[in-house]
Image (cartoon, rainbow, N blue to C red):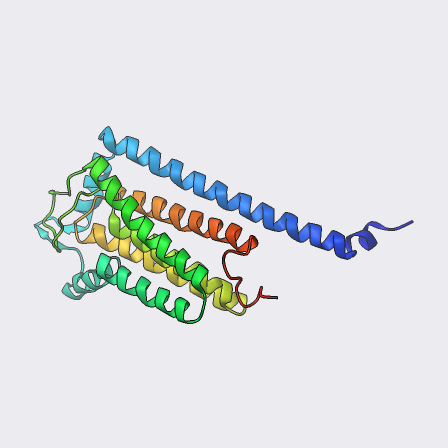
Length: 247
């Protein structure tokens, strides 16, 4: 009589187990997307009702010199560093990085991956702009702004777009990197960059903390959703497989 171990070692059984693991990971990904969207919706409702204003004000004031609200806490060089970091989430920088990556993917005949990156970032920019128009939350006027701003406050476009862009690029590099150490490094760098950009917006006084938190939630959800769709298209042969999955 065939033992359970012998049954599992059969090629068909191994393929079924791998398929189940992929399906489980994909389902977990969609659940994370749903959770992030629900978190954003909850934040949006609280912001619309003014329930977060006291906490937002407390955090912004805690980051300023009580004797001079125009002066963020910390040495002068830290403010300059924050300005440099916040630029990584600006439209010009993100557009330049995206076009450079898309050009590279196109020249290396990864046209499906190029379309993925371009669609994820462009779609994120459009979604961010539409949400700002819908919510029309004023920028913080509690403290002087350390950089110029022109658009509405909720959600933070820098936080959302840096998440959508850097997490998408991180996922792209993750799939072609060799070894878990390199993959962990790539994803950690993408996440850290996203977090630093969002934190710099609060430190510079141009966003309420809840603006940034909402931007992170929606940007991460958007990046993950785009990637899950890309994986589905890859299974149908419409997006090129990564080198380690190529036949």
